[in-house]
Length: 466
Image: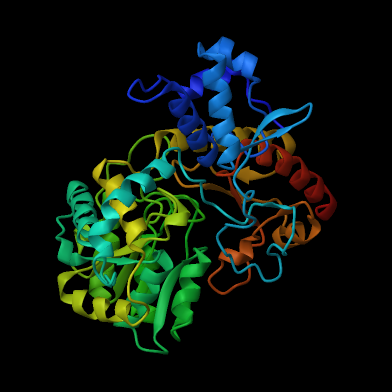
């Protein structure tokens, strides 16, 4: 159980809001810190005496704020332990991205650390964003609530987002979905008949392939190297396979982590146009830069035949469950009909939240970006210390390392571990096998979890590689 010192709490609280009673400000700020994960479930808050001394508040103010926390379910008191922060009802188990792990996935009630998922927690301030959005909800509550293509404020915000990035876009070209996978599935239904081929780089994000396979697509693979997409091989595969669609991940490729420059984006778009193939451009990781903001155009700027898929899950929070399509105008009707065949729209409240975030200019929260960068660098250093024979990449963005192993034992390592869940390299192979020399290691988790996981991984590796 962790303990929050008075000095640490003073730094997190910031300046008091003089427009409301001091106890109310302290209570609401503490509740927000707990709800947003800045103060972890189970952490011991400073004693009232310590809080009074460090915060410069009266004993009555601190006592009343702590009492409000307990009454609202955000704290409890234990004899001899003091006041303990808590999430009402306790943290919910799970919440990770569902990878097709072939039997390696988490079991109900498992206490294993889940490193099959690469996604950050909700950033600080998400609770307040929902509270603000609630003030706008009555306008929509007066209607039936069906917005199959998305509410107007969010479609406008997304159109402005692409226009600012150098891709002129109107709100009529935006279709809001319930996530990137829904977007991929809708695109597949719109432009691809059952039994037609989709080309994808291998490795790739497996759930996108599953979404297309569910529509009856046949898959074909082209390899991607450690330096990124190979345009000559892609051109050759397009000529050989003649696919209807191709999955393209030019922005911090998941899992390889590479970023394409404008020259290769333009070449790729031209090869797709030449072969008559519709490209699905997955930009889920586009805002996850860690070192410097990339000076590249969206790939759809180089062709009018590319469908762009975006998502709030990685850049904002997976709990929003929102994605979108940026469509070429000549495909917008087909994509809209396809999207409406799946469901009748995403939740309105979450759309209002995302519109607020986009209009404020917020993509990835700076605190999240800093944490991810620190975790990436720490994990690379720890791997060099614990497993010097491994060769992790150093991606300029994204949420995970792509590690080359000295032996093809990725699946054996995942089976050996009990305290940590891993996705072996074969999970990301287009054909579902191979890539045993590789392992994806997410660094988006809390540092404390990663500090437990890496020694366990190293111990298990020494057993399977012996």
